[in-house]
Amino acid sequence: MRKLYLPLSLISCLLFADAMAQITTTAVPFLRIAPSTVINSMGRSGVALDYNDPFLALDNPAYMPTFSTTSFSAFSMTHSDWLPNLTGDLKIQNYAVSSALNLESLTGLPLKAQLTYIHRNFDYGVYIQPDQFGNELGRYETYEYSNGIFASVSYKYGAEWLIGAGFDKFYSKFPPFNGPETQLDRISEGHAWSFGFLSRLPLHEWFTPIDPASDFNQEYYLNLGASVVNSGDKLIYSDPLVSDPLPKTGKIGYSTVYKLNYRNNDQPINLFLAQWSVDVSDLLITNNKDFTQDYDNFPGDISIFKHVIGLKAEDKIQLHRGYMLSFFETFTFMQGWDDQEGFSSTVATTGLEFSSGGLFKYLAGEIEMPLVKTILAGSAIKFSISEIDMKEKRHPLDNTKYSGFSANFGFTF
Image (tube, rainbow, N blue to C red):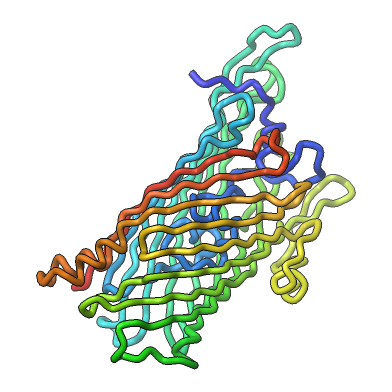
């Protein structure tokens, strides 16, 4: 049986910031943790990130995978031993399932739609509550989880324009502040809404159209995104007079993408991809002098020129950025930086992903069987790892690792 001796209030602070830092606290703080290996590797810059990761719907519900087949499905899961430098056993276990459909053949319009289901679970372990003499008063299983549904649609007119919305339901179970004789477990549940916008601007189509006679071509994209996530009623744990706000957050960001492609027997393969991703976020909560908290409206204190373009982080403005380099749809290296409220230094992240996508597409170009060719061209199996590196090597976040597995399947009918 796992045992957790640290007070949960201390753990909540350590989820995001140094213990001595002044930060804005919220209910269900695990919703603010990077949900996947890829997002963590990119410094949590997910609002406009162009990548086939279903967990991106949490940062921007307008997310939609990039696919060339009629239908596309994906499964992804992530595991992390959170804060390994602490006593205890904190576990993150998330998984996501998504499906997308190209509706152009049915409607005659350049429309796509996708639906994503995401489950997140944060296991705090078993909390043992001692009395003043160290004797055990009780044991409590402590955890939080959420189940979310996210949907988006896209329309292509000069560029691809996407909108999306999501509904997340969550449940929290924490131990009592006092002994078991005086107070029951702190249990609460609630829900939140999220909304997002995303645009993908194909600059190569505007300025340097692809030459159909060449086996090589280049693509350039500018992606712009904005979202409001975790918007809902405050949460009540045990005292109806005390409520805690959800981590309602506004996000604005962009990404730039370069692709070098090769056509092998009419089967396109991406030889090289480079992407730079930036977003800034503002926790849309105001701390009042009477110790109450109110929600703010989007975009909060975010300034496009100062924060998004100028890459400046401030007290409430969190700056997330990262880059990725991918080769032959087989190997991807990622590095990111995350400036968060309450941290004395930038959180650095790195990650690697290994994919069968390049091999499958090469085989699709060599195989003559149409059904097998279609399946291989739209499918991939991926394994990924990521790590958080802090300058302060005794910081609880240092050496926190993620591992992930995902598989996608595309088919044209």
